[in-house]
Amino acid sequence: PTGTVYDILRKAEFFKERTSS
Image 1 (cartoon, rainbow, N blue to C red):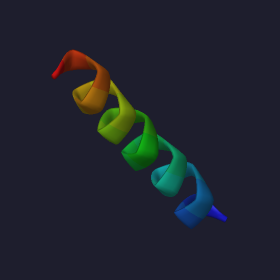
Image 2: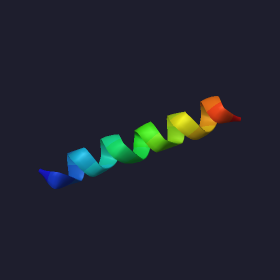
Image 3: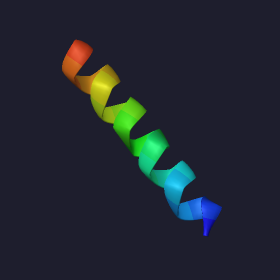
């Protein structure tokens, strides 16, 4: 389902922001 892909993308962005901090 597309929901899974969106979830992964959102998690990736969250991780990027956490590492950027």
